[in-house]
Length: 421
Image 1: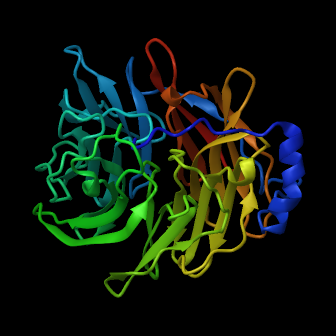
Image 2 (image 1 turned 60 degrees about the vertical axis):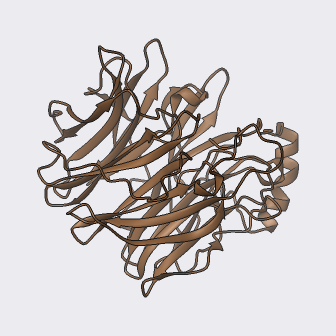
């Protein structure tokens, strides 16, 4: 990613405790967990068979219209090239894995990983990063559509027309009519700039375009002209239009989470979800998670403002026009890498990595907009290193599905399921 992030300082316990009153005064609360109840508990996850083979890594999850789960992942091939694969789980068994794309030019990266997005019916969209030049971070976004639930895929479309051998990635996809909207980080302003050059690098931008079913590009736009270089983006459809969240970057190197909305075919000016005030001179590689249902939106994010790492969540009941005060979720030593699902009652289940002794723990906790929280459960122990990637969660009915990379020689994608009680 542009500008390798410096090692983040995780304050020792006494420093974190000393800062809690400051954080509370700014509106970021860390409420006590709610008493366990039938409505609050998450069952302990149980392992599921994984369709991914040896060497697989960096999974993503989505839910099809009929409630089945679709998972995508990278998997090496016998000829040392790589394949982007997917399979569907019906609650009992996986379909045979299908290959979406294959070759030796994938940009395989722990933080910028592919996805498959259901578009309604049997229509799917897939995206992946593909190298465009010799530079370490010279790669394009590639998108393909399927009309038959992934059995075949249409032509590859690159949603950006700049043609520069610069960084394009961290994509989020959203259904749009019969096609798909893509939102991504776009490094075209960095053409001709080397990552080792002294001084601040060119601005990374946030851009969008819609890929139509006949592989045309429409509604191309720049949403923000200066954003953080390598944090994931998130986008959802609300009853007030498209909403996107991402890590912004001010002239003073404040890198808080911002959001923008599409309003009457134009994008609103970016606004912070909350003024964390995290000043950091490099990208922390830790983007937000976002989900919506009608006017209700939940967002989760990581910050280390005031040298106090936090995982926070906030809710909106006006389609993302505004967000309530942040709610603390972590257990004191988070690494971030958040994801979430929104539930029928407006609460959310949020996952993150929490540091542990010699490893990390994938945690999950249910949180309500008033600040009530369930006890956190530990989904799995995993590596704290980049190789473990960004764990994913998806919901189908009362079942929660988790997927992550188990670090090993070789690594492998692991899947587990929990039940909402």
